[in-house]
Image (cartoon, rainbow, N blue to C red):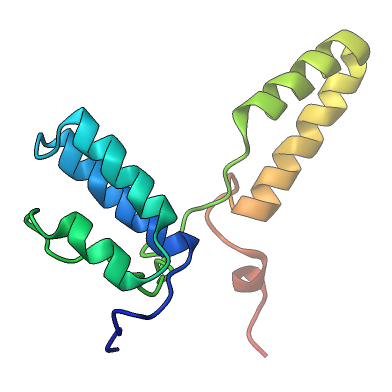
Length: 134
């Protein structure tokens, strides 16, 4: 895409230019006074030609342009992970409120859920493999 110098810019381009100036200041290419002066000019710029002189004497002669944003694609699939803080709060609540005999029932139900939902426990055979073939 060919950008004309008289083309107007928006806040995203101004923010990118201000960020680039900050990087030049952080690496020592600009003094504090130069950075402050150029930053004011960046936020007052209305066209691309207003930004070009601010970067003319810096290694990157043109201010950064807006690029298309791509979403990262997940490379690995994570299993179910329960947040730790709500789990701790639930356990403390149950210990304080629920009487002891109910804990046995909750433990049995949790074991059965974990065995059925995640395949934990058992002797290694599934229900389908124990049925005779048709």
